[in-house]
Length: 339
Image (cartoon, rainbow, N blue to C red; front, side, top):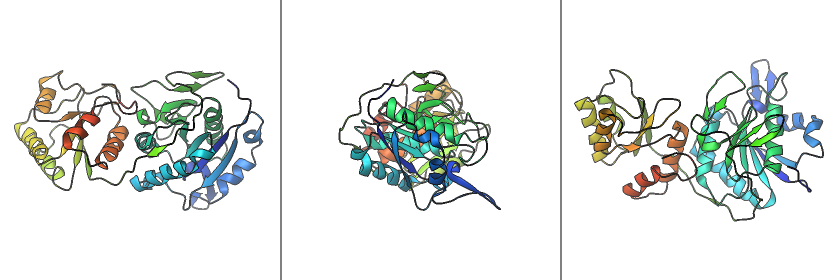
């Protein structure tokens, strides 16, 4: 697929490994260094490539320090530049990249241009960096294969942002999408898979605000003490994500079920997500799961932990009635779940 005019892409560099510079203490963020590196690489300026502008955030952030306020900052930045560009690339550290991708997918309404998040495992300036391929492809795909959603591009695959999860701390194949196939794959040919290419539109973008919410996360394990639930389900906690066994099962321990029910009766939403890498919650499958459904635990179906957490931030910020909050949690809003 080719274009007759060169598109314009806005690159928001928030921080992360891709733009780090070598120092005596190891690789560190360095203002201006990423832009210098890109400017020295002629492949980014070939005729086939889009025009692009790099905006470096100040200060540059390690993605481990990202918070909902930073998701808001990125979303507001894209909204401020939305009318002037054909697509957007966000450079981000890998540790919380999937959280940011998921959060932005919920925050953006009427998204009519591609937004691609990428980064690297090795800095762009280092030998054998994967950053060059990731950034080059992200720019090219944003310009020539506009898929109107938030995507995460890594190691030649464009994933739906709210379906991606970090799967490998050391390898180039750092991300995977266990319950949804890639939107696009960049091999010798670029192949569109689950994505839908559309003409770029000038539809006004709406950005929903998010704010920090009191959300707990607990992983079940054999012998877990029910008192942990009593502690986690106390105010100001508004929601709890429970990572259960298999298809949504938990021990049929009367004290544990009573602890969870006390929290639900006190107004806390309990969302059941599987701790398995692949698959979905089906609380009707076994008695141990059905017991959870009977006390009011809500199914997270096949949402990743990143999608579940950021969706809760998005919905809780709207101060919805509890029944509507729980209905929307179980509704596919941005392609994040398969009910």
